[in-house]
Image (cartoon, rainbow, N blue to C red; front, side, top):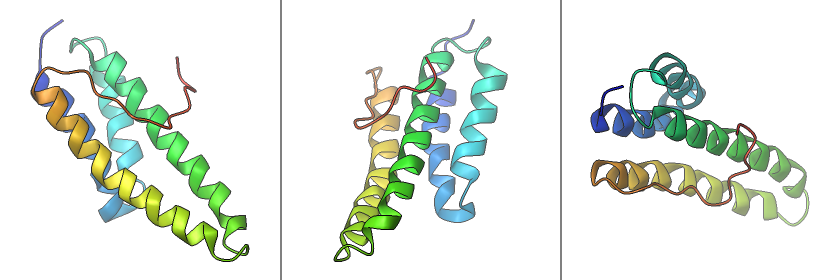
Length: 112
């Protein structure tokens, strides 16, 4: 296995494709993880972390839909989720480039 921090950074930043395509932020990291997990050191750990984060944010977004009818709380929560999904991939990509371990809070560990 080879050390490739640039590939790990790219995997974290590829989540931002959600802003452009809507679902590309899930598909591209999934493909990178599945194809590179045996070739790049740390890709399995980072890939699982990213996919779990994406699935968790999707679940939280679905839970916000009924809350929209409760005094608009769902809209506030959706804005918060959008901010989290914009900021955390960038912060964690910077951490990975510096050799630190990334952290995605509020993530449900679905894939272990």
